[in-house]
Image (cartoon, rainbow, N blue to C red; front, side):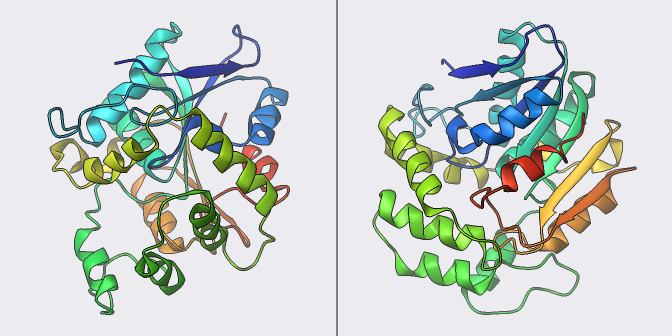
Amino acid sequence: MRIWTERAGDPELPAVLMIMGSSAQSVSCPDALVERLVERGVQVIRFDHRDTGRSSVVDFDAHPYNISDMARDCLAVLDGYGLESAHVAGASLGGMLAQWLAVHTPERVRSLTVMSSSPMNHDPRALWERARAGLPADPGDLPPPATEFLAHLALGLPPGVESDIELFRVFNGPVRPFDEDAARTMLELALSRAVDPAAAANHGRAVWRDDPALRVSLSSITAPTSIVHGDQDPIYPPGHGEALAAAIPGATLHVVPGMGHVLTSPGLPEEVADLIRL
C-alpha cells in the first residue's frame, strides 16, 4: 500500500503532521492554514488517507481495516520522512487518529491538537441510532448531531460535487459566512485527483469496526494538548470538545465562536492555524 504525501516548509524545522477527517483528502486542509503554520516556523506534512486521493485503494471486503490501521498509516508517513516525532494535529476522524497516536505511541507526538472531534473511547453508535430515531440522548451521554445535519442525511442526495457543496454548507454552520467558491474548488480538485472516488466510503465502514485499542483512557496522554472546537459544530456539538479537554490532563480548550465542522469560512483557516499547539 502506498500513501501520497506532501511537505511544505523547511525540512530541517520541526514537523506538523496534519491528519484530516473521514473520507477527506489532504487538499481538505486549506493552503492558507499550511502557509500560516510555515510562517510560524515549522514544516507541514499533509497526506491522503488510504482509499482517498492518490493513495492506494483497498479491497475492504478482502482486507477490512479499522481506526488503528489508519493510525498506523500516520506513523508510516512519519517513518517515510525519517521523523522520530512531530506535532500532531487532527480534525474530526483525524482527531481520533491523533488521540490514538498520543496514547499508543507517545514518543512520536511532540504536541497534540484535536480539532472538531470527539473522545476516541466514546462509542457513538447508540447516540447516532437514537438521534436518527428522533429520540433524546441517554442521560450523561455526549450531545447528538444537530437536527440540520440529520435532516440533510435524510435527503439521500446522490454523490457528487453539488451534493457535497450542500453538505459543506451544513458543516459550515449558520453563523460564519460560507465560502462556496473555495469549497467548490477544493471538492472539484479532490474529485479530479481521486484514484477511486467511491472508495472513500470505506472509512465509514472502518469507523464502525470493533477496535479494542480505542477503549482506553485518555488520561495517559502526556503530550501538551490543545482542543479546538467550534461552537456551531453540527456533527460534534461543543460538549464533545469539553469532554476531550476534561479527559486529557492539562489540555487547553479553545472554543471558536461561529465555527462549524469545517474550515470553509474566510479567515478561519488562519485563525485555527494560530491555535495549533507547537
